[in-house]
Image 1: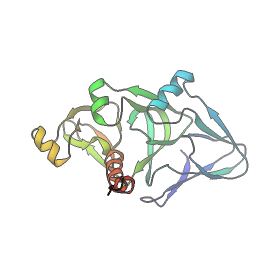
Image 2: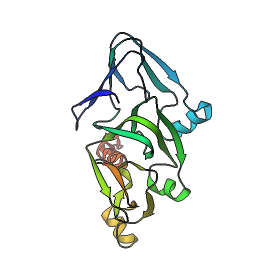
Image 3: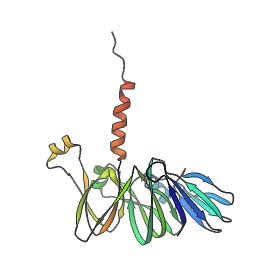
Image 4: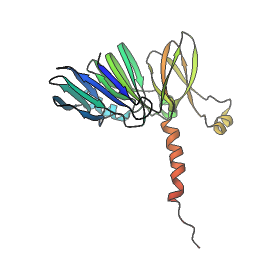
Length: 231
């Protein structure tokens, strides 16, 4: 387990790691904020060329960063989007993580890509690929906005908007569904598609949606690019 601290939890977080001599951590590309002397930084195509290529399809870096401490050292990492950083201990488990959700992990963690079925991939807004986290060690996830967890007991169900998903156990069952009653209700409420999960398991959700934020931002800046009326 890494000795770590997460500052500014729900705004612009920084993950601060203490690495003993010989300790190493892998991270998504462009994650470094700062590091002390004595850390060797290299890039690695984890999983080979095909693994790296598939990982890039899921929104992660083609090359993963590897930081190895040649003496006791410290390392600061930061996510690309404002939000939160979550510590997820993994013990011989497998999690699925949505686009951009993986920030860093210990060397006992394997980062690969899973191909969703066609319906889930096309209609989720998250694409056909998700990140698969497996192995044992520390994982740190980045979220857009704040983060909450939903824990379901065996047989319990809940519905989560696709754009709010961060991570969930690969063993959990989930199905694509329309949360509103009827297609017209879905259109006028804006809740087009969501995921119905069945427990047991704990789901990590974020308070902001990349998809919804993009639409809102485009609507806000569109008037600045509108063509002036010709007189």
